[in-house]
Image (cartoon, rainbow, N blue to C red; front, side):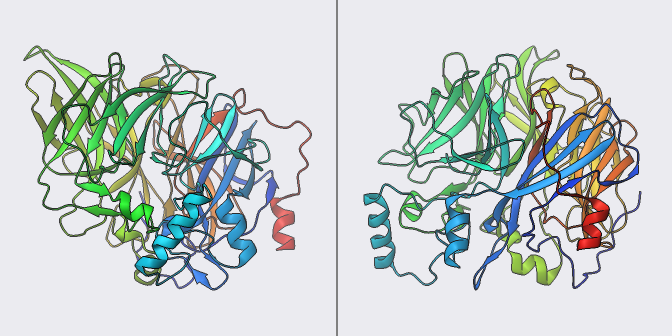
Length: 524
């Protein structure tokens, strides 16, 4: 396997804005795209990093762009479109940020009194200063496709032409303005969607809720902290969580959110802090059937993304365990998990210093003890874990896919796609010189409950030689590239997405195609 060199090119475009919205039919393909791949990869991520004279400070400040690669009979088409959030529309119309971004302030240098006045105005107008530009992930609730971020705001879009429809309204009384996760879980067996909502107030609460199939009503499973637990002045930050058939597992870590800072118009990132005086993390384990909660402590860690979790009966001890595979970070050298992702550092240093380690935690439900180890014992920094979700989420599984940083460091981004066989912990890697990869999404050959790796990985890639992006198709068994569909433009590094088969993401039969790849190149 070849890996990218780490020399910084002055025109590296992975962190540069892409403001073009295009419709491209019949992309140029190298190799062969399997004809059985029938559907669309829809992905989300930041794409515009300046407005007017304001240059955004952080990767996550960028305005959301929805990208769609459609696969049909061995051919690939592409279209992209900005999400018309209030933040995007009013910021571009006014030539400056309308609301605070993730890290960039709409009005720099505000004093305490100005923050109070701004907050009072928002409260009287029924508005929130929290994140509204949903640039993190894609989800499907019933027939609705939505873009999500780390608040309860969900913006619907049309899955065919990607036009923005408007905010999704839930049929319940849970808070309209709250922190949530962009990583809800779908229970494939019950059809329920499960997520977490953080409510701020005199008592800060984590509500774990479920949504029944074809419903928009959020029903609370449990609330943390339960009665008898200490109140939380600063609730712990939840980016993702795990589920099994019987449990929801939250990761309570020393990374906390300040409700007062969010209330008084600080950015989301400035409201986050790592409390080094807290010398433990814990797993908050919620019984999905009766809402009972228990908390089991372990050494301090930070986790952004859960790979998977499953229940296990230890045949040696005859005790019940939960196994959790998590991408973890050591926070002893910094105060904020997202500090390495400031755009100035990413551009000037030409490197990503984001060293996620895959760890396996074994939580004993009988003794309430926990131990962990690296998985595998020696591995490169990883992120964006994915599995054969519909088949194995919440269940014992064999294969895990991630991006990885391999070869000499530092690197501009993740330069490899990795498969880990969890039975023998052997690793297979694929990468090419000057290629950098986003999240590898597994698509099974057959839409069944196979435990195996009969399928492909789809990964959006950036080629620093051509300065353009593509979608790479990797055989998940051999971990070799079998096809690649090229774009004539670059896409900034994105975050998350999902693959939807054509029976769940109907295409418009008479869609007008603007141009194909060769025509676009002539016009460019």
